[in-house]
Image 1: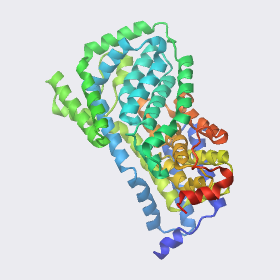
Image 2: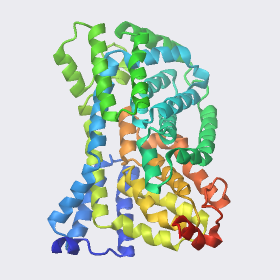
Image 3: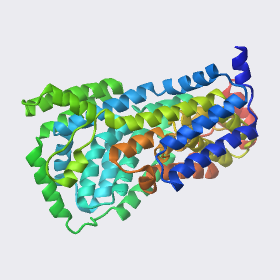
Image 4: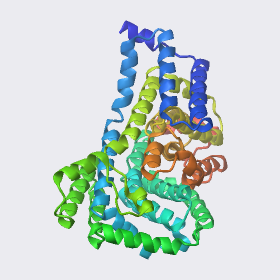
Length: 479
C-alpha cells in the first residue's frame, strides 16, 4: 500500500499537460507525417509513460495494475470484434452480403447513391443501435456497390460511418447513448430528445453535402461494371430473398434487447445453417477455416474477389492488438491521474455557458485523441464537468448531450481510436482518408458549441441563469 501511495502521488497540472502534449506530438507525427500504422507510435508512447512513471518512483506492480485496469474494460468489445470477423466471412459465404449487394443495385439509384447510403445506415442504425454492426454488415454491401459504381471509396465510407454513428447516437438501444445518459444522470429518452438540437442540424448539413458530392457516378462505364458485378455474384453465390432472414433476426434481437454477443453468435450460427442448406457439400473443416482465416472469393472477377475476400477472426487481430495497446495507454493515464489532473482545473475556471460547453466538448475530443477509447471520452469529462455544469445552472441534459457530441462521435475520427480502427479495417479505407467525408462526426460538436454560446436548445435548471448559479445548485440539491 505504501508503494502504491508513492506511485500515485499527485501530478502537477503542468506536468500532466507536458506528458499529454508529448504523446500527441509522437502519435500525430507518426501517423500523419510519416504515414505509420498507429500501433508503433502508441507502443512508443506506452514505453515513455512507463519510463516517466518509473522516474517518479512507481513500482512495477502499480504499473501492471494500470495496464490490467485499462485492458479489462475492453474485454467484451474485443470479443465482439472477433465475432464480427466470423460473422463477415459466414455472411459472405452464405450469400447474405452478396444478396444485399444485388438487391441494392436494383433498389438504389446511382444518381442519389451516396445520400441514400447515409439515410439507409441512419435508419437501420437507429433501429439496431450498433454502429459496428451496421458498418460490418450493411456497410460492406453498400461499400461494394459504391466502389462498383465508381464513387470515391473514402466518400462512400464516410457516408456509411456517418449514418451508422447517427443511428448509434439516437437509438435507445445504443450502449454509448445509455452511458452518456447514465454518467450525466439524465433520463434516457429526455436525453435522446435533447440530442436533436445538435443532431438534426448536423444530420441535415451532412445530407446536403452528400447530395452535392455524391450524386451521379464518376465512372462512365458504371452501368457496365454493375451488370458485370451482378452477373458474377449471381453465378457464384446463392442470391435469394432468404438472405434477409439474418437481418430480420438482428432487428428482433435489438427489439428484445438481447446483448451483442448473443446476437452475433445467433447470427453466425444462422449463417452457417443457411450455408449448409444452400451448399450441402460444404465441409466442416472449410467452415472452420473460413471462420478462422476469412472467406476467400474465387469468382475470377478481380474487383469482386478483392471486395469479398475478407472476414475471419485472424483479420480482426490487427484491430484487437491496437485496441489492447490503446486500452493499456488509457489504463496508465488513469492510474497516474494524468487526464484527471489536466481536466479538473480547467472545468473549475470556466465562467460562461458557451466556454463551459466548448471546454467539455474539447475535453471529450482530447480524451479520444490521448486515450483512443470511446467510453472513457464520455466517462472522464462527465465526471470532471458535472458539478461545474450544475453550478452554472445547466441541466444534466445539457451535459449528456455534450458528452455525446464531443466523445461518442469523435472516436471514429482518431486513427488510433478503437472505433476508427474497426471502421478502417472493416471497410478497407484509412481513417485519414474517410475523415474529411465523415460529416456527421465533424459537425455534431460544432452545433453543440453554437448551442452553448447562443443558448438555443441549451437545457437549464428551472428558473436559473448564469448569474444565479448558486441558487440553481441549491435547488438541484434540494436545499
